[in-house]
Structures are given as C-alpha cells and as structure tokens.
Length: 270
Image (cartoon, rainbow, N blue to C red; front, side, top):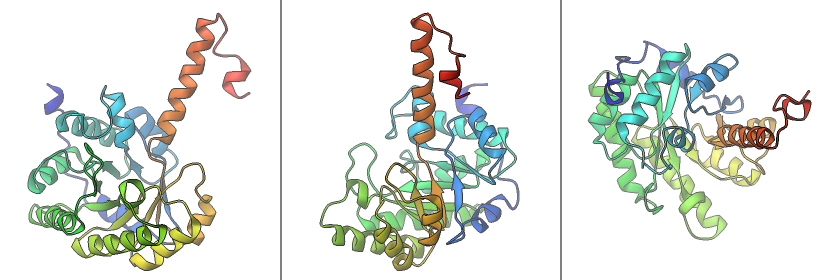
C-alpha cells in the first residue's frame, strides 16, 4: 500500500462530528493541545475529549515546510493514521484545502475519518489575504459538499487578519468581526482569529462575531481561565508543543554529543 492509498478510514464514526461540535461552549472552552503524529495523538487523547492536528507541526514531520508544500496525499495519510490511533474525534488543519475542489476535499477528508477541519483565509504560499466574499463562497461550497455527501463536518474558519492583515488595531478588529460573521453565515461552526492576544480584542471578537471562537494559546496570551471568562469556546496550541518537543530533543542530542547522559535529572525534570 502506498502512502497515497493509506487514507481508508471510510467516514467519521457516527456522532463524532456532533460530539466535537457540542464541545465548543463559550465560557467553557474545548482545549486542544495540537498533535503531529499518532504517538502524540495518543498522549493527548488520554486526557482530552478531542484531538487537533496542526499543519505547522505535521508538515515538518513529513519532511516539508508549512504553507501547503506537503502534498495533499501525504497530509491526508498522516491525518488518517492519527484518526486510527485514537477513539476521540479528530479535527484536521487543512490550511486552505491544498488546492482541492470542495467536493474532493470533503470526500478525501471523510475517508480519513476526521470529524472536522480548519480552513484559513489567506494564501498559504504568498501570505496574501483572500477576499472575504471569496472565502465565504469557498466555505459555503465545502459545507454544501459535505451535506450532499451525507458527511457531518465541523468547520473551523480561520481569520488571518491579525496575521497577514493591515490597518489600525480598530480596523483589524472590525475586519475580523465582519469576516467571522460572514463565515458563520456561510456554514462555519467556529471562527479562529489566529494570533489575536489582547484581552479586550478577544472579548470584542467573542461578542461581535456572535458564535464560537477559537484562540491560539501562546506566550502573551491570557491564561486558560481568562480566555474562558472572555467567552472563548476553543483554545488550541498550534505548533507550540511540537516545537517545544523538538527543542527538548535538541538539548538531549547536544548532551549526548558532549558525552553526558540524556537521563540526568537536569533533562528529566526530576
């Protein structure tokens, strides 16, 4: 079996998407420490009710840079392996869909068994923002394709205004709210304004968008308890845990190169 063929989970188990959707509760957020392979997925699934992949973590594991440089077949095969490894719903970071038409994207994602996906509104290759109306049409087409195929799918619509947008802070906030509302109307279940970190902005987004929002936890972001108080429904970690694991591995390798033991207490935390 080739890696391109290794996406044979048929469809998500009945109810997994509904269960994932129900976990998005403003004020009591779903916490998703993003994973990069089956092993990390098993660790997360042991203590959390759902698993999320992060493209900026999965892509380097596959030998590629983030930004849709990984072939769709390899990314989907990696997602399928993660789904098979755990008993909880899996939501997959699909960047902007790897150039696949909505019907094919839904069909191939459903074949992995994933219950949800992230779709972003900037071009992964150029960093340019996609027109909001164009992105809304794309999201609506994904939702329509899923409905036509009988696939329940939790769509997390990423808003990149705080990543690749321009304008004053007030203008960015207004644009993120506008896009978020449009994406919910197009069929998204949750809106993901990535890289927003100011508490006032997060609270305004939660109130203004009028639906579940996802915040990425990183240095400088309010605490999990504070995010809950601001009305956040989902908290993810992006590639943060993967990068921390890589940094720790680099320290262990350096110790071995220097003739030291990687099992010393300074590395194990004991």
